[in-house]
Image 1 (tube, rainbow, N blue to C red):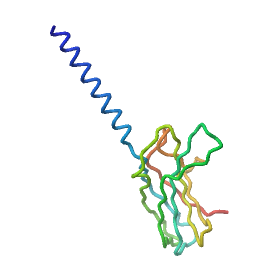
Image 2 (cartoon, rainbow, N blue to C red):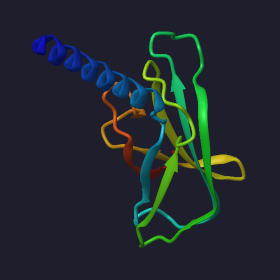
Image 3 (cartoon, one colour):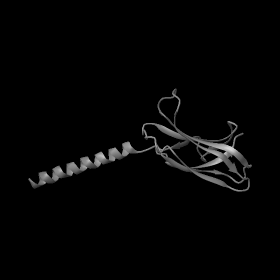
Image 4 (cartoon, helix red, strand yellow):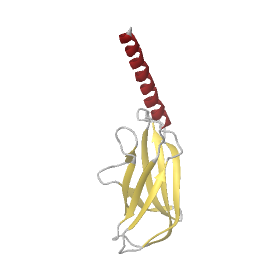
Amino acid sequence: MRIQTLLSLGIVVLVLTLAGVQARAEDKTAKVTGTFTVPKELDSIQAQVVEIRLYKIHPMIADKSADLVELVEFKDFAHAKGTETKKEFVIGAKAKLDPEMKYYLTLFILKDGRRTHMGQVPGKFLITVLTQGNPDTVAITVKKVR
């Protein structure tokens, strides 16, 4: 009788623990935190717009475009040559994370709507985040668009 009670109690604890883990996974947001850095070697930038976009895309469907999750803009952005400029950002905090999707960021600096600079993470083609073992924190370096 005592063993059955302990066994039943153990099963109840296991079920409640698994339910809590599932609830936390469902409540996870697509929040990404990061910094972008404009190296001191780059020419000065005056009154431009930094545009950071978070996208999600299904990794198994090649002919469907990515969905925009959130757009963050920094207007009147400036950088002085000779000084490194570093800025922090948060994106995607209000969006629910879909673990089946692939997430990535883009960062562009725009002048009159045209891209003058872009962000990159060394060694990566895309700035992938959140799912498939990718981080939720990124450090992006800005470079001039050719």
